Amino acid sequence: MKTITLYRKIKATPEEVYRALVNPFTIELWSGEPAVMSEEAGSAFTMLDGHITGENLAFEPSRSIHQKWFFGEDHVSDVRISLTPDKAHTQIRIEHTGIPPEAYENMLVGWKESYLDSLQDFFEK
Image (cartoon, rainbow, N blue to C red; front, side, top):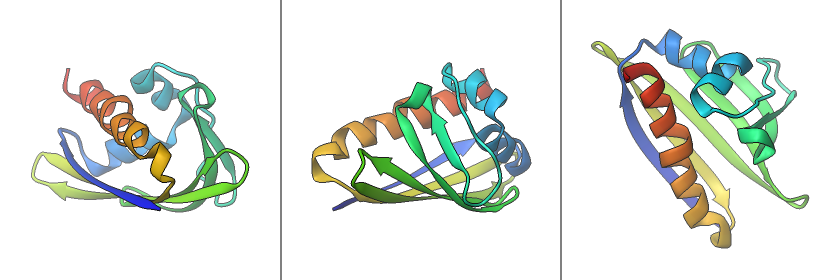
């Protein structure tokens, strides 16, 4: 299994970034795709029109999100998103572990382009 660890500075407060990651209406605004999301531990979620599915495990408002992401029916990976204030920005740290080797390149591109670039554009353009 493989791991992706990414960092990105976003020009917004941790509260604003956190809201953008947990509010389904805001997720749809920055991703351009329908999303189902709730801040309830144990709830299912989908993003990017069903291309990302999983289960929400834990939330620490304005600080962190912990999720399980599913690859097909038989594989589960772990995603932890941490938010840290950095002057007028928020430092996002994403750690995605347990990625099947054959899915690694697509996940890396997806995290960078569909997730982080879109989120950054939402706040900075």
